[in-house]
Length: 125
Image 1 (cartoon, helix red, strand yellow):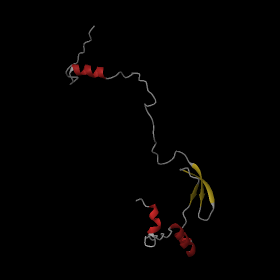
Image 2: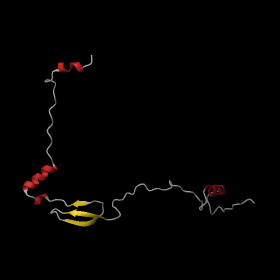
Image 3: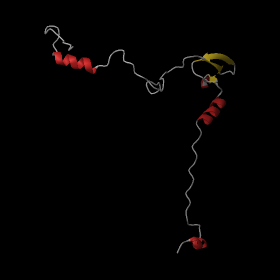
Image 4: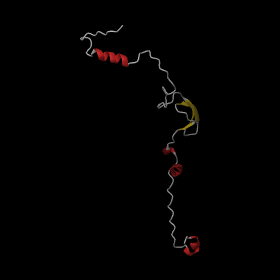
């Protein structure tokens, strides 16, 4: 038996034929789709912090060590050294190690001191 759709004009501004097309084009809500491994995947979590705390060895400026828990997986953390409390000689030695002097540029070789006749046998004719 043919199914008739009756729509009153006051309830729907869309024509009756458009409603039939919309009803046919949408899949049913309980449609069974078979998924595979490509359905959903997580490639990379963009977290700023790790989800747990890791055991770390904290070394202070006087050499003492303390075991603590830290948010990133590191083995040793060193406290920064205050250079104002160091003696002048040690401060200068640390600065020299931290910022080494620039190396001197080598002089370019010139062909003035080379006798070219000794290498004539290697030239192609």
